[in-house]
Length: 374
Image 1 (spheres, rainbow, N blue to C red):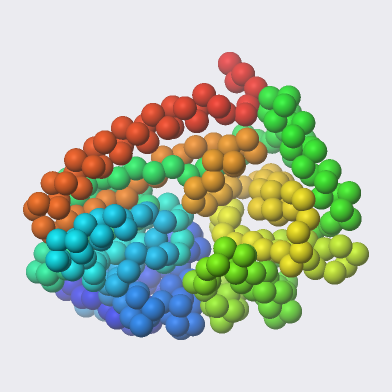
Image 2: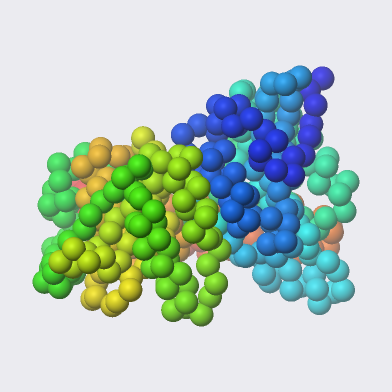
């Protein structure tokens, strides 16, 4: 019989075995998760207590999940603050809660890793037993695949829907070919926005992997911190994380640096694999009109076309992405609430919310910026 264990550090699980199950998605890699823990961005003190679930057959890893005990709901991109508040108002503890997710990363993908379906389903069943016995308020699985969502629903979790915006490569020859598929007003607007950046004397230097040195990481991190400061917030990540991940999984890192006459003024950071580019963070040390759109979207689309990538995922939220060629995509999360009274209330809420998300997706689909594809 396989052995179920919870691991308080990802380093307890051999990187080669974890990555063999995780596949190519960079944010799910052992390098990403270990860099978060080693840099102290993810620790119990920070509200993220690693409890990675694993199913072992001797020394062989059969299945695994990135799993945490959380003492807050920051850094998740699926918002349950109202649920926590309701628990508190009734004199109950919502935290700690169980969370199966990639910290600070709203990239959809597999959350129940395994060599085969049987191992993955067994791990899920054993985890649910552990969660029920723990006395914690809830379990949340964020951004799983559709297949996993079906398993989670079968296991009694409530499914929640959300919306992201992704760009899909229709075999475009270049950026102009992509623009040619947009309706004329949208095409004109994008050209005007890009022209403002060019007229400001901005060029871009695109670096990948080992091309990114200590100086570039330091500049990007200064930009990243500035973005949070402008919103009176504190960044989740530190420079130690970026440099560690950049060393451990270099080819997954893409840095686009905006420069004027050779002087850097802004930077955007992306993850990538063989299939997709994932937008993550950006910032600038001075304001340039439309630089945000250029650094975060247009350069990314241009890069994806040149590299032959199938899609560019623009990250969480942002309806403004629609007019820039990104299309609405339904995302899912799954939730189990221990208290039957709150479980029923959450179930009713999510049923209504799903209807609202469906209507929102229909509305967005009517506003796609592309010319008639018929």
